[in-house]
Length: 311
Ligand SMILES: C[S@@+](CC[C@H](N)C(=O)[O-])C[C@H]1O[C@@H](n2cnc3c(N)ncnc32)[C@H](O)[C@@H]1O
Image 1 (cartoon, helix red, strand yellow):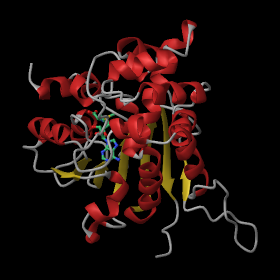
Image 2: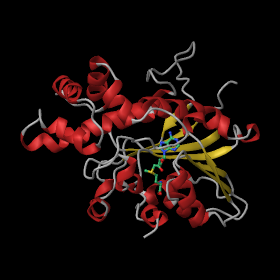
Image 3: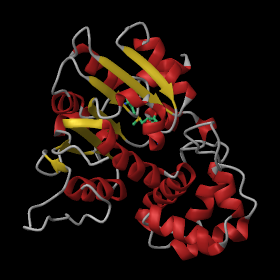
Image 4: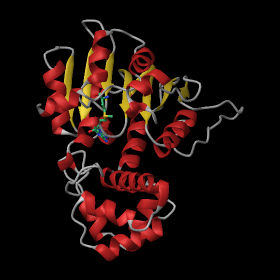
């Protein structure tokens, strides 16, 4: 099995729903900001006309090569390597304000999780890496071995949402150097007992992954930039996999800013440039979760630009 094949094993989550919500103009310009193996993009292309455009973004070389092998021959499709947190810089200025839809299928792909050498999974022994991109940035090794007690505790508490963050951070520091995913898992299991042990391990890994990839900062940045990139009536479909991401998306879709407070004009009319049109969270059906357990935590929200932002 080649690396590309494991990419194609990734089953796109909420596929029909995301295509249906995203496409408002079958001749428009669309951005798949989390291209992965191209599952969503392939479906989008099958609903777009011959003069539409789809630009796929990913920071992972392996994702780009898998997606290009799958849909690269389609002349409506092009791909760009980069972090979606810098989307306005990745797209040429003529496209700003011209985009009909942006898709964000957040997090990591099945492939990234399955490959032990990427260090995302606690189910296989691997190096402490967890970078989605080889562009630059710190690795999980640095977080685990070089952060102060306070920094490590905060990462585990805030990004992993793990209650026993103090105990786990102390144990990790006592065991340094920690070289592998298995050693990190052992450190967590040494201080968390009972049936919740595996959940705590998953939470610690999640927290460190979010820190390594600056996932929440990049999400805030791409949401901000979507206001400049999307045309009026253009949409963002965001699929998140944990409550930290969903909270950021929810606030932004409510108000067009990260405080979640809707600005009002002199007369008290709301000034938000964006409006959530999904009526809250859309979740995968029971059948989808049964068929693809990785979809179980997915939460999709959709918003639409209602007024061009003043630039
Ligand atoms: C859940 S997967 C997407 C799977 C894809 N929708 C499919 O159907 O094959 C998320 C992808 O987004 C990429 N990604 C996550 N955060 C990113 C970021 N800040 N910038 C660019 N790519 C990112 C990951 O590398 C991964 O390939």
